[in-house]
Image 1: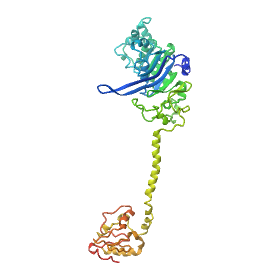
Image 2: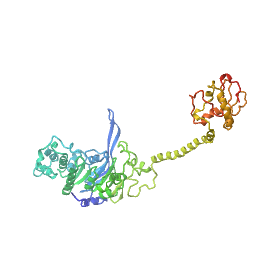
Image 3: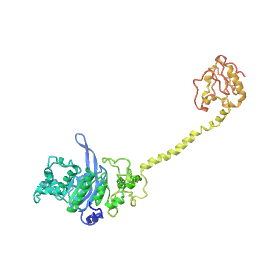
Length: 510
């Protein structure tokens, strides 16, 4: 395996700061929108913004790695660069020639210089063709006659990628996944291209086979002087094979830097979150606290991406300007370009910016609700204050029954059999506890004369008149009345039992 420290071509180092030789591939404002149609007439109702404004270049002899989440537009970008898809906008230059809207006839001679390794090794090979026919197709399409014949050249390529030359007459279903990927690599290298776009070359392979394919790509680059643009999810693979790395998010490049500076000091928050997800194979860190950054929410839909910075809906450093203004891809350090208003390891492009409007909305109601709750609690406590001194007065009477056992005026009229028993208890209780009755318990007789303390005045219909005390007494207690109180229950202290309906006009006995 090639040493990482030795893999720093001079062209890559020169191209990182914008100087040196002319770029082999130059992309400016590349855009690809897939229309969404509806109805029989295929009326356009929207568009999927797969790629939206990519700008980068690739120097001869270097390897540009592209990383990002699924659905961020990496594979679409690779197909646009190789002109397998027609761009919606932008500009693609290869060796100084604009190939953005070049016709198929004019583009055919340039196909031999731009080749692609597809992601799926099972779907990229025709199952009805033999390996010799698959790898030899580029020679037939381009009209190239290699020395020694096509078969000899195909067998040489198979041996170059680690396959047996005797596999020339076999079919793709007779090979494993790693061997099929090697066949795809041999087909891409048949015409000795100058640029190879590898779309997930090792994602469908086992770990041991991944190492073999990665080493094969590395060795072929040194031997043939190839230029790679590798698209992958595995950050460890990208770190091993890449000279520069571009981080994509929702159709845009958010950070572009050389391998060392990106992995040691990432500046975009999204890149930092990706780096924190890479497991560290160190047994000594077992049980240690993880520094992984967990992003909240899902990736927004490319049909309607958020305004401003597309990462601000999941970013922990987002401010007001992030939701309104899209950050440009600027070079904050030598060879380090970042599209962020508040980069991690650099000065803010928008210092002193206010927080997001969403944060203000969520915080302000909480601050306003707290004083309201306090005022409501204070207002609710004011009517309860006068009831506090009434509680000790009731507790002073030793023979006072429980609050739920108090009967109302309507219940006192339901005891006609034993009028004498309540009168005796009333007479004794009136002498012992005269202070129990208050001014609020005095009721007015029909003739307007006030009733004596501790007595109840009978109404003309034979029932006690329920005065203010009768209506306030349940409120003073804990609010529970006894609707099923037996008829023989004694009258409450400080009140006389009501006479039967026939004796309603008699005066109460002393």
